[in-house]
Image 1 (cartoon, helix red, strand yellow):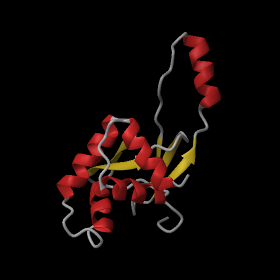
Image 2 (spheres, helix red, strand yellow):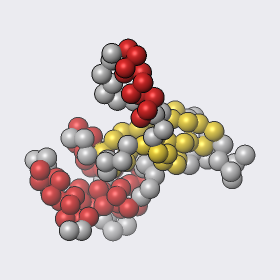
Image 3 (cartoon, one colour):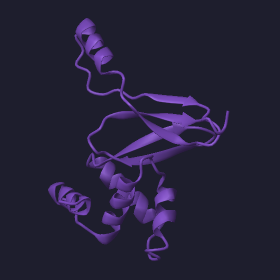
Image 4 (cartoon, one colour):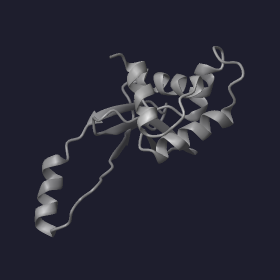
Length: 140
């Protein structure tokens, strides 16, 4: 089964109507290895879909976030901007360049630490988030 069919099936499972625009947004996100802003998605899709509107991209991204298909990442730089990435089952964090804004996904190093904290405090930890900020090799 290919990725397009998987995404189409996922939309159906979630009770979200399958449209060409929704599939284009999800397929673009699946092809990226870095989070994208709504404007990034709009810019990449507007040539192949001239009737697409930025508001449509935002509306669909918000629907995907509500249904846990996409995650919304707040990155605090000069201006606070929301980034979105397709949730594909691999929990990870982000390394962000303060100068150019480049974002690199990082494998989560916190699983053992999370278990230790849970045992020590008797908390049931349901989520954690980590963002590291620095300068990439090109900017330092």
